[in-house]
Image (cartoon, rainbow, N blue to C red; front, side, top):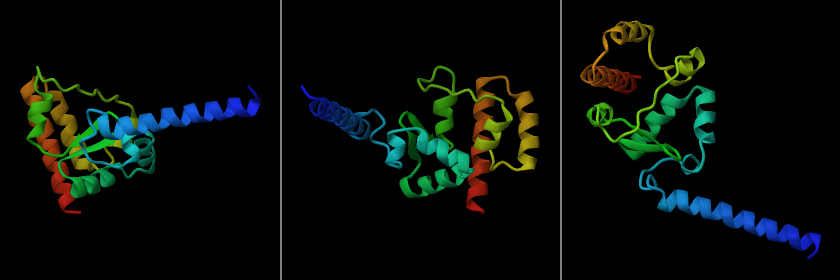
Length: 154
């Protein structure tokens, strides 16, 4: 087997694996039925780039306007914009996996750039009061309503 033949085999195998990955992620993955950007269904690089630009909340709003209440923003990530879904997702005993956000300044700045100073103060006060699952649901519902109000009035 020559070097050219070896390279051809490697290229063919690589292409086949990549094509198989794309087909699986777009058509057979459990989240394939949810709409979203094509590249977002394959890699988290789209999400990282959008966050780096500081436009994530605007892009997500546009995606919700285009695709509805549930949008796929990563290979294993959905964004849900319906306030009633908060109860199903965040109540204890729910089958949904919860994400714990780190408290770093950079992460908070990237993910919550839309929150105003007033809401930051209110959020700080509410965080000290949240101690039960029902309080978490109540807080998240208020937060989502605030974001929807802000998005609809910008």
